[in-house]
Every structure is written in C-alpha cells, then in structure tokens.
Length: 250
Image (cartoon, helix red, strand yellow):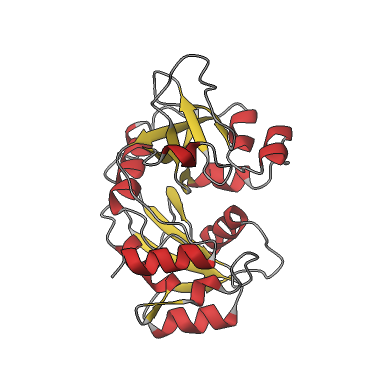
C-alpha cells in the first residue's frame, strides 16, 4: 500500500503555440526569457513535484524548451484541450509511473510554489478517500471589481473544503452582505488514474454553459478539494496582462 510520502508526483505544463487573444504568448519575452521558461522555473521550486515536464504540439516550443534545459515531450497536434494534453503526456512519460499528475497552466509565470505544494499535500492526505479525485487552489479577491468579471472564476465549497460549484457569475449572490468571495486558480492536481478516466468523459451541460472543464468532474459525482490560501498569481491572456506581468516580475 502506498503512503503519502511514497507517492510519485509528475508536474506537466501544457504548452500550445496557437493562442487566440495573444498569439504565440508562450514564447513572448519577459526580461530576456520566454514566458514558458518562467512558468517552468516556478514549477521547479515546488518541493512536492518529483519531476516537471513540458508537453507541446509545437516544434518551435519543443526546441526552445530543450535549449534552456527543460524536459519536453511532443503530443498530438489534434489535441485542443490542456487537460487532454496533460493526460497524453502522462501516459507517454516513462521515467516513473506517476500516482499524481499536476496540470500547471503554461501561461501562469507567477504560479506560487505554495499553491502547488499545498494542493499536492491535500490530495495526498486524502489518498484513502477515493471520491476526492482532484485538488485545486483558491484565494480571496483583492479587488471587488474583479468579482463581477466573468474572466475570474469564483468557487464555493462545503464545510469539508470540497467544491460545491465553480462559476463565472457571482456566487453566492449577495442577498445579504457577503465578503468571503474566492477566486479559483487554474491549477489541477489529479489522481493519475482518474485523469485518464476524466478525459474520456463526455462534456457535461454545466461545463458547456460556463466553459469550465472542472464542472465535468462535479457533474459526474466526484469531489474536488479546494485549498484556500493567500496565493498571488498572474495569468497572461492579453497584451495588457503581459505588460503587467513584466512589471510585476522586474
């Protein structure tokens, strides 16, 4: 029987060259290095990851990542979804058989290592509870205006810390004053066997409505553990966010 200390954890950074709002954003320069380099370097700081792998469909990204020393693997060009790319890479990975696979978004060059480590530890501590299949971080909103924005995903959880719902809408609706809004960070810590099952599940109605993949997990009756903390990240989707990331990372 595996113990929490013997679990093998693979961190996978899906890196797709084609992006809609900011074309080729993963190779954009931030202080002399491409964005994907900074994401990779941040991931290496996490103490709970046994190995970090970049998964891409682009020869440009593949060669770039090899040039700065990253372990990188080519995945099928037909894959459009980050989770599918992570699952494909985890299946092809041969250095060890992972128990846990961490999906680290390629466009988050400032993902806190504490968010990764605490989510891995949360899933490890609940390893006996087979219903909990994923852990993910959340943090209080810094700016009230962001709560109203559909670009920021909100999450509510039960007393045990398991997610009740994720939404681009304001949840809960403040019929009475409510302050404890939580912003979801796009980091997913999967049981490796569940990840392979998850990507074979059909899209669900709420997932399609909200365009949030994690709702597929809840709609199929599984639990997602929400790990709350004062995590500060910076996702890069636009030219303005890229400039902001450059300023913050000086």
